[in-house]
Length: 231
Image 1 (cartoon, rainbow, N blue to C red):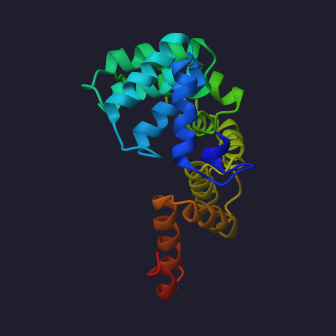
Image 2 (cartoon, rainbow, N blue to C red):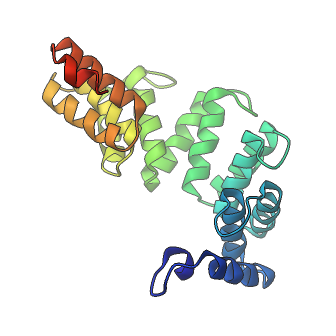
């Protein structure tokens, strides 16, 4: 990890891979997971989704929650393996039961969308809430979205704003954009275009395309065409 991040030594991906491999061969679950990440992203080694899947599986079968989550994602997306939504749910569920927050969020997404499992909004809310209360920003935003629109739960704008704000505090771009939309429309908060534009700006700087669009639209409506066209 030190060689990967350049902590205390000059960054050296090859050295990082060497030590991850040695750790993985010794049975260290986190080393297996880290090595899998490198193979999946092509960091320090030629990209190889099959090798990534192999090490994610080894780590997941040993009990590593992060590997369970990533293995589930590989099955959901069909990365290195034939897409299998039921298998994705299986690994998300195992990760969630181990207390892995991103697994909880991803499992909730499957329940919400009915992917690999029968749609069940009660279960979706349960897992989003567990992940959000544990500090997962994706889950905070998703939970806020459901309270915002009254999907699977009674609409509650106070809770929606609360969860959007908590996610935005963690620099979650989509949550910042959602907050911007609430301020722009006066939904759950007093209408305040200046505050809306600030949230759109912050989200856009982090790569949120919808925030960039929203900012451009409001500038166009205000007659600031030259600024609008920059978005």
